Length: 102
Image (tube, rainbow, N blue to C red; front, side, top):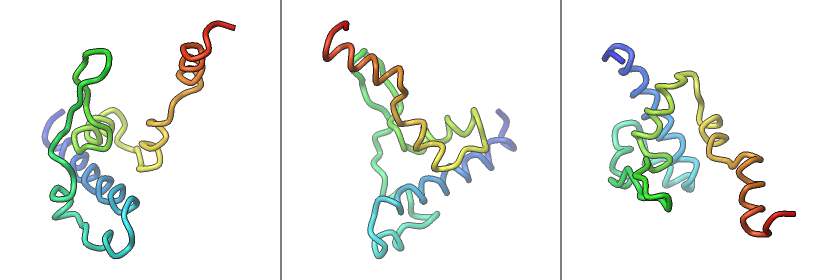
């Protein structure tokens, strides 16, 4: 993507990050977080090493939000929350692992 397309995506990602952080904190702490200082409140670690020996982006990191917005720039904070919920297939797979075949 070129820089003209990426600028609004990065801007929107920053606003989504502010909304997400404010939703986690109490009102008086949430008032301290704004567009300019949001990066002071998030950890620097953007990746993690999963059980399948892969390096993955940490959910709700700035890079993760930008990556999701590149695919669909119309996403909202609620859409991103829904993406993190396990699907029925994933729940069935987990149940099969725990209980064995029926």
